[in-house]
Image (tube, rainbow, N blue to C red):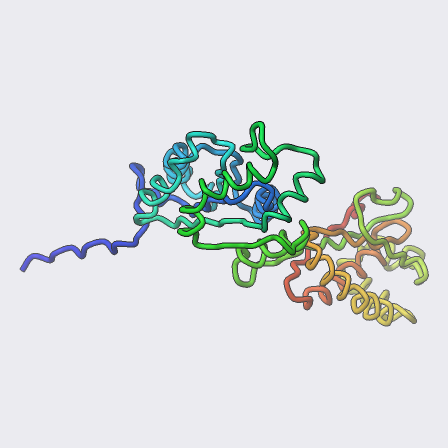
Length: 306
């Protein structure tokens, strides 16, 4: 008996000519002044490949490109709006034709007329559709053009009561994968003798602890080795400082997430960046890993310079 191959699921992604499945695509659209740029920046920070002011007719080639990229472009966000002029009118039809078998969603950003007028006035820019009329005239024209798109959108976000930080946080909440870190903190050890790091947010000084450099058996070792770790952590105040500093950083890292600050650097210094700062950076990183939504990296800037 001949086996009959099963039919492909109707909602399965359609592979391109090279057999690659196209990646996920998100169309970001909505009212001018409702926060498309902020949303696009937040998506880019999340690792999406963002294309701004894309004509709707270019969506299909973009999907094909994502398939040809063999996984290099797994998530693409295309900002499509009335700046596309007459081309924009074809967005609803093109979106419907592209949905078949593809991971395609539409995010529509909106805000009240009063808020949009205020935002345009604050930046002293005309509405793209106001012509010789007022800002409100342009808003009304745009609402007519986007009504069908708004009705068929997968996600609708009203930004009337949101500032740019709150909107960015909302985008992160919507598009972060479950378990994905919303903030990455780098704990960096360094030596003061080589200068303060210039790209850090917070600095701690471990020179209040005895220096293993002056102990012959430890001088040639580093803070990555157990003998140095045991010596540093056995000193009075060492563990107490690390525990207290980690606890103090918890609300800081949580606040960074609320303000949509995606990256921060905590620098830990000692004289040469070889012993005390290295031990402390490693220990601190282990404690900070317990903060929800935070990914922790360790970097030893000056290790090996001596």
